[in-house]
Image 1 (cartoon, rainbow, N blue to C red):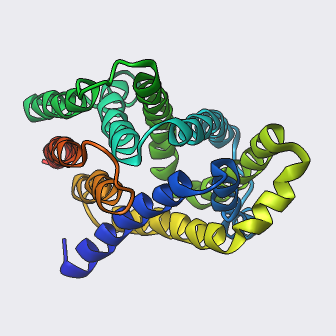
Image 2: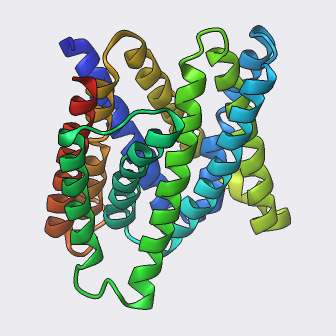
Length: 283
């Protein structure tokens, strides 16, 4: 992997952690998430116009992505309303590759090797540091962990669907356009259900920050897809998942969250396990 590609993927990881941090710190997290996902229309509209209409097989994958991503978005907003960024973000990002690896066995036929199994154990250890931190089993602290688990499982399922679609060269760009469209529309629908007629006012209050974060969100996605097209998947994904460390650092130094050092250590353990997992998959 060249220095330029490494730098861009690390930048993508940082962008992902930053726009999640803006959702966490927003006065209204539903509105901020809506602006971020709604910004995907900038990519979606040209995509569905310029590329061929998807086949039935691709529509099935689109449905899986949209349904699971809706659950993910609901859990994402709720976990940031209830929990700390430095706890719930690394937990979600740690659970996702763990579950994805297990789901890939029956769905794609990819069986983990000994190194990957070892990395799963390392990731679990990192997650346990979060689970067993002081006061974690109180109702106030435990519920965000449950929500981050739901988000992680949902992410795992739609990641499998995305992987299948992206591996079909004739369909990948149409797939991207349609999932961005439906991600935006379902988020607007969810936001209106939660906020009603107040939604327009809430969106106008933070539209500059929200759209800026939205652009960062689909730039992050674009960089990762581009890197995957020229580099081994294990190398790219391993670098991308360093976002858990960025999130823990943001939580400690910019949001003054409790257990900062403990969560940074846990995030490094999780990131290390993910790196081992994906480099093992690349070998």
